[in-house]
Image 1 (cartoon, rainbow, N blue to C red):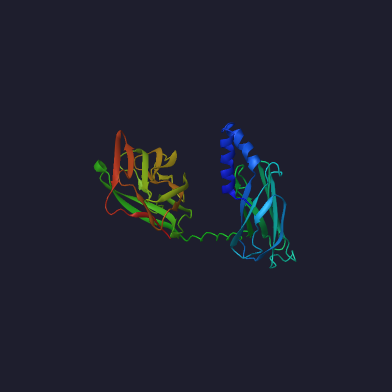
Image 2 (image 1 turned 45 degrees about the vertical axis):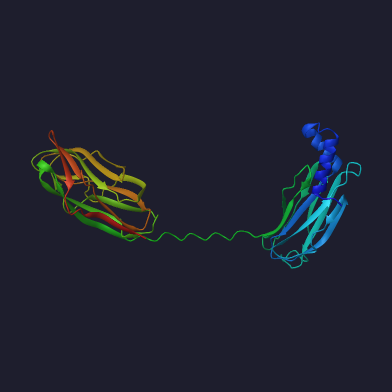
Length: 351
């Protein structure tokens, strides 16, 4: 018997005697002269008791055989050595383990799992095995790794596993139905400088609560019951600005969406069109570029935007601080900012 250490020492002796010539090719030549060792591991990663039902070597010499009984979640080892070139320089070892317990209803009695290590003059090969169970979709497998090592000693590892199918995915519950507050009137006092203090009347529809990450849509526009007016001068290029709360994700929109008389001139002359709406840096800007005649009465337009909350908490949309509203009266641009208190236009609790 000889182990890997003896082979290594023998190799050094022959290399010295031959003058060390040949480089990598010389090493291959020496290994063929000296032979090859295997130091293998067999792991049982199943809850089954495995019985060694085959153990055979057609070439070389086995110096240690694996355990006859391989307990659940344990391992065993086997060792062997090939002959020299003169003796054939080959090593093959075949082993088989059979479960002692029935693991599959359609495989009775249990069948043997077979593995093999083979070395022939500088080349290693290993074989694996696989047993599917039609009754349960479980698989009893024997796989290998590290089946290499042209010089000295190979250290393959064979693993026996009972692979069970993954559990079925947990169905995603349907989104929680949202309960909406409809057409809630909101007023906000704004300071317009030379335009004095004014009040913007709005109405909004929004869900009272939503799950974190759940999409919800809010609608904001002028209050149909409290229309606006152009007093003292025709106005155009009106803008209403709204601040989205921190942590808000914009899912889609915003888009112009009018409810009732929103976006219409009720009396007097002029038009609010064209109306556009956009969002940038969590500020929604709704623009009515049309010109409203002096003395006209109108309802500001409206928009929809779909949002979600990234964390739990209260998500309140307000008019933007500065500017909150702007317009052009003749050649004068009027810009307004919110006055305290700043009222919530919408309020949705994310949980």
